[in-house]
Length: 311
Ligand code: ADP
Image 1 (cartoon, protein in one colour):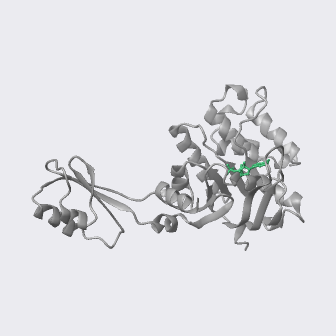
Image 2 (tube, helix red, strand yellow; image 1 turned 180 degrees about the horizontal axis):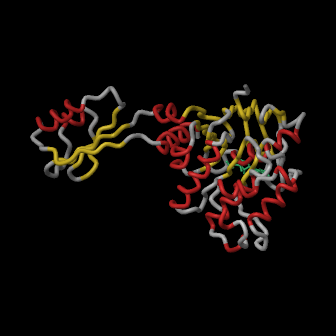
Image 3 (cartoon, protein in one colour; image 1 turned 45 degrees about the vertical axis):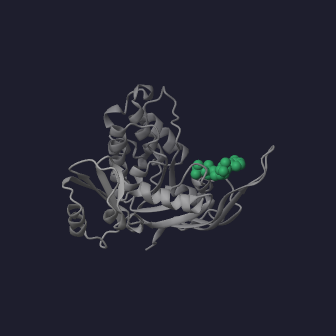
C-alpha cells in the first residue's frame, strides 16, 4: 500500500523578476513526505513559501525544479489525475450568494465531471454539519458555516487528500474548535489532511506531524511529539513567602532567575532536575514557599527557537 499521500522531492521555485523586484527564490530544495492518513501541518512565518507549495500542487504556480507526486501521480507527467486526487480549500470565501449550499455542491460536482448518481452533496453537507441549511440561501449562512461549505465544496469529487490553507484565519475560538471537529471527522473517514496555519495552537491540537519552513527551506519535519520534546524548556516558578531584592547567590548558582518581586524561576530539562533539591535550597536561604507553578514547552517555543536560529 502507498505510504505517502504526497511526496515532494527537491522542490525549488524562483519567481521571475518583475518591475523593480529582482528574482525571488521562494522554495529552496524542499523535500517533504505527507503520510497517508495523517493530519499534516505546514508551518512557517509569512513569506516562508507555504502558499507557493500549495499553488504548485494546485497547478497555479509552475515549479522551477524538483518533483511532486500526489497520490502517486506526478504533477508533470500525470497532471489531471494528480489534481483530481486533491481538494483545495482556499483562504478566501467565494460563493454565489443566491445559490443554496446543495446547488453549489451539485454545480461543483458537475464541473468536476462527477456523474449525477455518484454525487454525494447531501452526505457532505451532513458531515460538515450543514444538512439543515441545504436549501437556504448561502448569503444567510454564518461565517463559520460558509467556511464549512468551502470544505464541502473542495470534497465534491471525493479526493483522498484535502488541503486547507489557513482554515481558521480570522475565525473566533469557538468556531475554530468546531471546524477542528469537522476536520477530524473527515480524517477519521480516511482523508489525508494537509493544512497551513500560523496558529501554533491549531497545529498542536490537530496535527500528527508538522513541517516548519522558513525562507523557503525545511527546518523541521517530525512527529508532533518529537518536535515538542526537541527543546526541553520546562519552567518551574516558586513564589516565596516574602519579597526579596536580590536572589540569594546559592539560587543563582542553581540557575535561578528573578521573575517578580517575590518569585524565582528555574528552567530545566525533564529528567535532569531535582525539585526536592531546589525546595531544600530555597528553605536553606531562609525563605518559605508560598506557591509553585510549572510550564511545559509548547509549539510556540519550538517555533520561535527554530525560526530565530535559522534567520
Ligand atoms: P507564505 O505562504 O509562507 O506566506 P509565499 O509562498 O506566499 O509564502 O511566498 C514566499 C516568497 O515568495 C515570499 O517572499 C513572497 O514575497 C514571494 N512570492 C510569492 N508569490 C510571488 C510572485 N507571484 N512573484 C514574486 N514573488 C512572489
